[in-house]
Every structure is written in C-alpha cells, then in structure tokens.
Image (cartoon, rainbow, N blue to C red; front, side, top):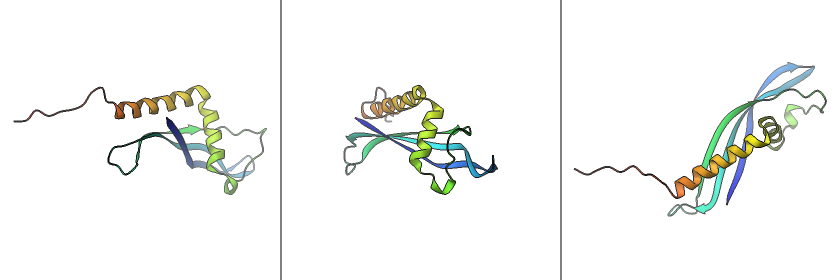
Length: 115
C-alpha cells in the first residue's frame, strides 16, 4: 500500500491584484509517496519516491478570496490538484507507486566485474 503527501507551501504571489494583496498565482509542489513496506535494516523507514513541479493557478473571481495569512497547505493542495486535473494527479501518483515497486523489486541492477 502507498500513501501520498502533497506539500504546496511554497507559492509565488502577486503583491497586488484585483484589489487584493499577496494573490497566489503559482504553486511549487512536492508529491511524496510512501510505501507501508519498510526498507530492510532501516529502523522502520518506508520506501519513498517524490516528484516536484509547479502549477499556475488562475484567479477565480466567483470564489471568496482567502487572505494569504489564512491559507493552509490543505487549501493550496486542493487548488493545485484541481488545476492539475484528476487524471493527471492519478498519473503522477501511479508513476510514484511504480517507482517504489521498482525499488523494492528491481528488474535491472548495475554490477561491476572484478579484476
């Protein structure tokens, strides 16, 4: 089983836009997947994989503006996932799940021939 954690705490803002201050327009996101399977001899550390990216947001004039100081990671994660789109979010998560599976059960390894 794999769980996913989104970090959307780093954002670019317009200092002033549409009469509001610190308007978020771009999100620097990190998606981390963690397996419930633990690495051997790691003291209980799970297998993990991450992906990073940015996502431009558009100002939604029909929704209520949230002042920057009231924003939470959870709110910005919702915005980011909505802007990315459900299908692409699922593809990102599946890609990380496959990456973890390849780490746990590699189909290829690098070996060096001794002299």
